[in-house]
Amino acid sequence: MSTATEVGTATELKVPKRRNIELALLLFAIATGAFAYANVDLTLNGTLPLNFWPQVGAFAALLVAAHVAIRILAPYADPYLLPAVAMLNMIGLAMIHRLDLADRARAEANGTRMPSATADAQFTWLVLAVALFVVTLLVVRDHRRLQRYTYTAMLVGVLLLLLPLVPGIGTNINGATLWIRLGPFTFQPSELSKILLTIFFAGYLVLKRESLAVVRKKVLGLGIPRGRDLGPIIVAWFIALGVLAFEKDLGTALMFFGLFVVMLYVATGRRSWLVIGALLLAVGGVLGYLAFAHVRLRVEIWLDTWSYAQDQSYQLAQGLFGLASGGLLGSGLGEGFPQFVPFAKSDFIADALGEEIGLTGLAAVLMLYAIIVQRSLRTAVAVRDPFGTLLAVGLATVLALQVFVVVGGVTRLIPLTGLTTPFLAAGGSALLANWIMIALVLRVSDRARRPQQPTVPVSGATAPAVDV
Image (cartoon, helix red, strand yellow):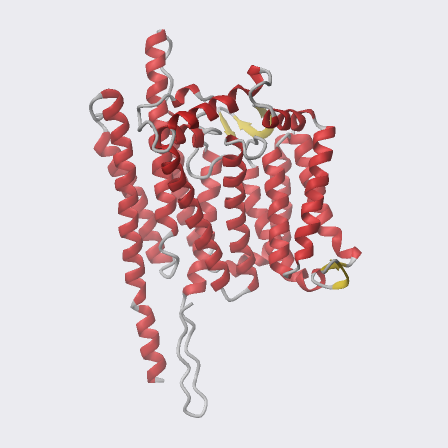
């Protein structure tokens, strides 16, 4: 047993090093955000605000508290996820603050009422998000227990998805029925439903993956599933079309269907599911274009942005002008005119950032997202149980699809949709959901990296502990 004990001790020694890496990267993220925040005020006002250091201290204390929670509750978790998320949050807050200052300057020039600071509200949501992050790590001590709630997660997830359609509480904002209104507050239930439906997909596919992988015949080298096994993907397709029809949300429909197809492929390893999913997506896209006016409008604006009616393509055109004026290196924080881009704090924050930090800076921001997705997929490969693998893959896919759909839309790569840029854009419900997602990935990562207990050796053999 001595060798196993020595190996296990050596593995334990890696934990402080891992956490020190995380803390160093986290402090770098805080310093980067503080620099961006200071640069905005120095450029626009020539001085730092009086509450600059208290605000930076509050940001730092909040993020360090999240680090301490990970150190205590998930000591083996991936050390790169929290710093990447923190840097995205800090950059987003700095950009929202910069747009707040532009709004105040416009109000002063026009003699109108001073608008409230969106950055302050966003920081309040960030405090709640980090609190829920810690609560998730406290409550979910083992991700495998979530598999017990597979069908409960489905039921609650679908109900949340349909909740905005309930008369009296559902509200339509910018043409989409995605929000519920409770007094002065609005909330987007689909942000929580994406987590619950990911849990459902993971649990369901663990139970059914063998039958879904059965192949009766091959066509052009692709294994075609049995007809009765096509039911789940057809149901997911109809749900996506229902979201598209009743809630007028192209982005959420695309995200949920894409999530199911990717998880189905990972669970079965059959390329035929990707082909079937792509065909259903193409058919759904054509049906959506022919049947729904809002889908047809988005596609036509995407195909012909510049000659379309100015009031309908104005948002996309202004965003593209902003990106073009930013060029390779950008105009500099506080030096551009991102306030001329509609919804610059929410849907078009990528364009607003691209104008002031340029293509280079925007590529660095996208690289942060790539790091989060890559580390989540690495966790999926390392974890030892199939449910954990599918859960981590699903959460990584949700994040990747959100970034692709929203950034692709505002850069005219694909038709424009209404998803929120994770961690960057203003929006409380999205911020809460995304921090919960990161907590779940860290929980899976902690289990994946935790050393196995040494087994009792047989006939004098030694069984070393393993660190994945």
